[in-house]
Length: 212
Image (cartoon, rainbow, N blue to C red; front, side, top):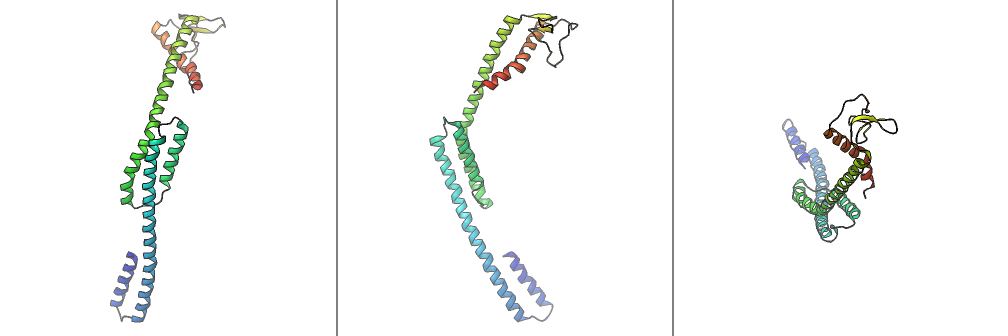
């Protein structure tokens, strides 16, 4: 529409520099009017579609709110995750709306989606806490077993397999370098550090893999 107005103004400026041609003006005016009808029809269609898209988004927000009340608490968290992903995809594909309408709807959508996602977030935190408790328990048990069967040696020695060893059966230091018989005596604090390092680097990762 703005482009059509500019064309009309340019035509008027052209006429000011010479004799006006009314016949050509009539044809030009008719062409502009036809173009205007096409543009206006497109605008009407766009406004109608935007209205439908707005309604679609509002209905999706209400659907998410209703679903949150009925299903967001699990216990099938995989199904909850899938459904939340579907909601998010539907929001992205819900069609174009104006910036003003989007600014109006986006906060409503975020609030509804966050409320729906909150139980899953809490379940995830609880799962992490349970796994950490299992890891801590495994660490305590394995530490007790190593202490019992390996014993503490602060000076490097050869184990039964003929490998230089120190502390609670450590054959390597935390930086990966192997223990050598010529290494100096370590203190008890460092021995405890090596034990903890061994367990966390080599034993605990295997325990984590076994956690459901």
